[in-house]
Amino acid sequence: MTCQTSDELQSIINEVHSLAEEGKVADYIPALAKANKQDLAVTIYKSNNECLYAGSYTKKFTLQSISKVLVLALALQDRGIDYVFKRVGMEPTGDPFNSISKLETSIPSKPLNPMINAGALAVTNMIKGESLHEKWARILNFVQCLSKKNLTYDIEVANSELETAWLNRSLCYFMKQHQVITGDVEELMMLYTKQCAIEMDCFDLARIGAVFALNGMDPETGERLLPIQIARICKTFMVTCGMYNASGEFAIKVGIPAKSGVSGGILAVVPDQYGIGVFGPSLDEKGNSIAGIKLLEELAKRFDFSIF
Ligand code: DON
Image 1: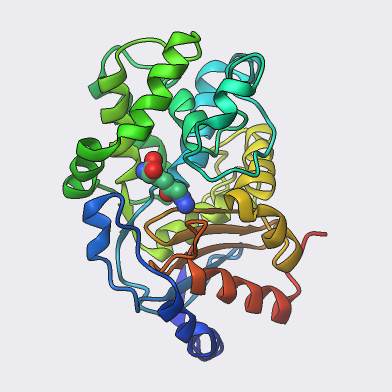
Image 2: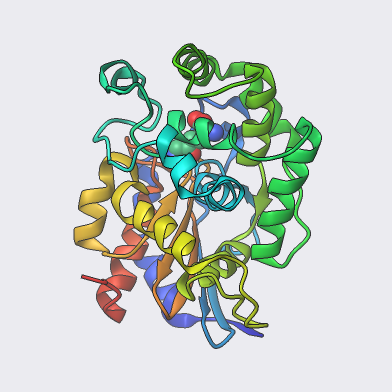
């Protein structure tokens, strides 16, 4: 593995950086409001184990919604495809990530996809384990296998979300009423807020992206970390729902599987070639990194990334 800073990536960062002024950091999870709006970083992990980076790439951030795609991969392994999609749909919503409205109008009453909060909460509820502790250990261990790194979670961010996540609790109680989820809602909230608070940097994110780019293979050892079919399902959701109600525009302008989080991270995948980690906590009105998206747009133009 060789890593080096890249002048070309730095020049793209310099070009798009001013956009950060136009967005704002997430504050509905109070601890996230402490992020520095000016941070912007990118790491590209190539399938031949070379890596390039630029910007504030050593900064750590929490996964937030990026965890949804990883926990989906684990749930699919734990329960199988039929079990998972009996409880969560496969369709994009066109609604914001935390919207409750379609839960009531969809028949049967299940969340439309695993990338919106309702769907992700239902998926986290499927993770196997005898106790909350065991489920958490399995999630963390799985993410560590993909990143090949010992990771921890940001307790302050997890607690801050746990203390304020009334809307997510509402989604859970609605789904419990309709038998989409089972068990204790507070326990589920503890598990979900911890998964969202797993902390990493752009390099770790890019490395995970490389595993998806290689359809589930470890880029360094060639070991299979995920079945091909599961890697494909995850990448497909990233294309159709990964940037929420901005997924259509992102598919046209960038054209690769990607998943964003409100901490400002974006996990992106150029199939067979690269995993990309982006961090820029200043967000647009849909909850995606405003400069991070522009950075990916510029990269896609220069290197012809689009899969379409
Ligand atoms: O559940 C939430 O609201 C957060 N933990 C994650 C949401 C999120 O990252 C949406 N992303 N853009």
